[in-house]
Length: 309
Picture 1: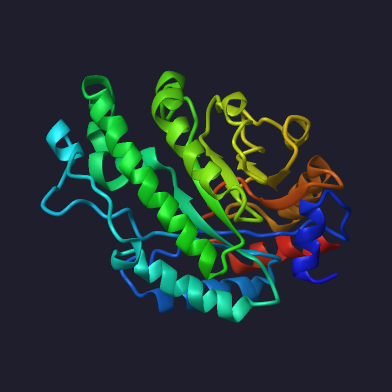
Picture 2 (picture 1 turned 90 degrees about the horizontal axis):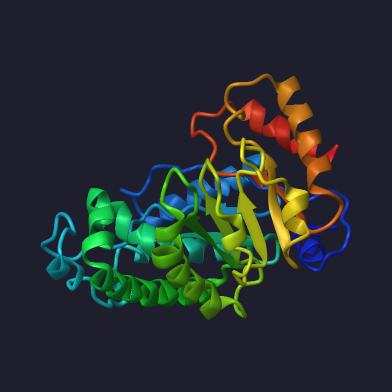
């Protein structure tokens, strides 16, 4: 069974010899070229012999010209449509094209994206986001609609290059955003992105990001084939619980917070526990969020070996 067949069988709800495995972290090369990004991603994938590649995307959503911080209605109105190919994302597309060529027929790869609200918050509104939601709700929604359309265009371009699915991160934890604001400002726009690509990406994945009191019940209606979250965290929920509530697959089983600071013996036992928690079908073995960049290579190799033993 090769890497593509293994993933396809899991997506179809069939048993496999072992669950497809992937791990990821941020390479920190957003200042560099797409070619460099592709080389590092492929080197990482091949060195650890992963089953599928999650391509990181650290090329930020483009900030409007002349604005150092979005803090008013006028600033929000300067967020406009743009050609995704004529933007900093062109470097990501260059990386994806190299990866598509190199992995063609051998393995699937996912492309990473941040939901519209996160895209607005990360390098545009920042510390002003809470104020804008409270004082300029309609202008915030209008800006999010523009961002949503730009992200849909991005996704379609990525998928056309050969991406097997979009891995979208959404903020959905109590420590990050209130449930009221999640339901009003995050979910509707993120949902629109998934609805626009639900028939295009075989491995479209929803990453429910957060550490405390995840709003999982509010996410089950997303048309994603795969759900990923910090299942080994203090607030779970367990992989088995989510599998009962969705038709698709779950991705997790590995606590990203222990990969860099524990013995290989401990990690091997952790992987065995993760495999048991994931079950025999509809399960991808992976971290619940990014692992540390300075992780010991022997730890990652031990995880891979344990997953296949």
